[in-house]
Image (cartoon, rainbow over all chains, first blue to last red; front, side, top):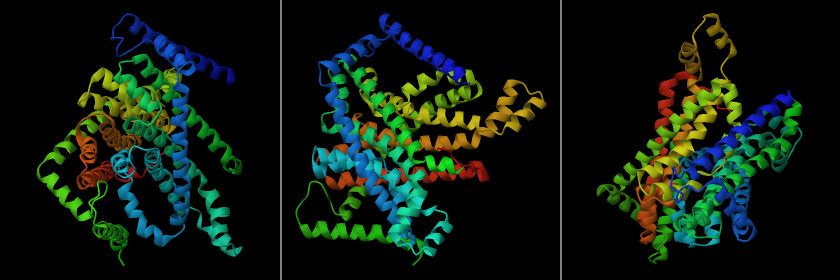
Length: 255
Length: 253
């Protein structure tokens, strides 16, 4: 079974290599102007050069830092608020309808408001990223906490647990699959908003780098930046899957 | 208190507090405006048609991209779901392209397509393809195997099997996927407008900020919120109407 899986993977690697070769072929024959589409060789050269001599690595880390800080902030606030709202029926009745209105609001539309309040600054970017990735975490946490098996709360009452103990020992573990799913979505949103904030506010990072490369018609640099952003998206999704798997191992064992 | 009263209590209190705070501070701020003047600005902008024109531009791009990307994603999802070897061979290619954040394509779009509808539609379409592809593929994988046995027992041809068994069985989940993609489409369209494309509601809110009129900026924010909420309500109504009880299908994440 494993050998077959490896064979399929090798096949899909060959197909992907075929697409890269097609890209190279199109670029070599200039079917699309090289101003818009440099070949993979030139994009790769620009990537290697940027990472070794240039400051591309620095820009990558700036984007990662911004994304992670905003996301962590959103996760902390989202879980704390979500726990308070999810465990209290009164708060839910007062606040849930307002959240339903705010949820479909595109997070990027608060960027102009944040710029007006905070200027083109680092806190502005952080606030926008945190605001955007707050919603998935907050709503998933509220859902997770309000969907806890009621008998577990009865157990808590029978054991005379205090409210914080109930939240920490019963509700939080039982809501953790929902919370992690919300945090995964929040991380995607955080990456997108980091890029948009860098483009708009000119903060140093990959978003700014690809925009400036496009304006200066440096297409290989632009594609190098896009490849890095794709890699960043991929690595962050793999990383959170690993964390999810590690943290939820008890659930799979219980089954 | 009734449910509606409870739902409105906190937003109303916040608005009154904002009104009083801004009025009392007395200074003409460049970043905030009292809610009353935001409403006046909203009505004025709706009245002179600029906001409606911007809404039309944004929705045209959002739906254009949704239909283009949704159709591509649907066809690929059906193909990958029905032809398993193809799905396995394309795995690495799909997984390499899918994580690219849609906004990262904005500079590429600017460079190769220039500003305008086509550019925005292309980026929205890219964002919508993956949701449709992944969820359609999952919908086909989740079809009750006995239905496929029925189609074999009836000796249906492949096209008959696809149109009479596979698509109807997968349809509820495909419609859920379409609804999710529609939500993304509006978000991506507004984001593209704020980041680069000089048209639509996103550009409107950016220009209102840059021309230092906070009441118009907040009016746009409120309007974008209303449009997003309205779209969401319409889509869930349509979903219930189209599917009836089948709308209750669980979405696997």
